[in-house]
Amino acid sequence: MMRTDLAGELRRRADTDQRARNHCIRTGEPGDLSEIDTDNTAWLKSVVAEHGWPGNTLVGDQGTDDAWLLVQHADRDPEFQRQALELLKAAVEAEDAPARHLAYLTDRVLVAEGKPQLYGTQYTDEGNSLQLQPVRDPEHLDERRAAMGLDTAAAYDQRMHNTYLS
Image 1 (cartoon, rainbow, N blue to C red):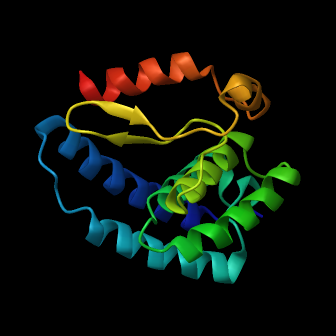
Image 2 (image 1 turned 90 degrees about the vertical axis):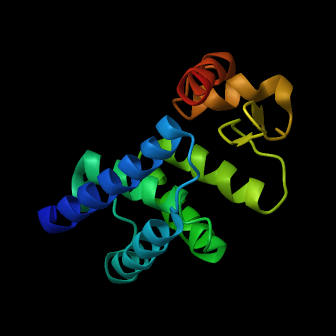
């Protein structure tokens, strides 16, 4: 049964997150996103503790996207990101969340652990230039990306550069 109250709160939190991040991108100012991320992480942890991963069945497609966005930005709590990754794997297997979410969160967790990513979704900002974080087995990257419903690495790289460097 869908919980519109959770879906609405996820939407509100994701909107706040994106407004703050877009402001930082537009202005070039670093901004202080830590308060937003810390609050969102604590709230999402309580949701996960009570309901499990907020998948399509619980919060709808948009709510699932919003939950994924919040956990992507929970970098200050890598243990929670790893926990969410396991829950998200199960949700994807149950067709209750999109595989692309699993690809991004997998890469986020791997990069945070100092390991090469699998799907080529994570970049670093190296002083006005984006650098793709190391990728395991780059020769088969596009095959792995396609299996998760992602576009090619070249198309994604172009989109990242257009978004963050133009």
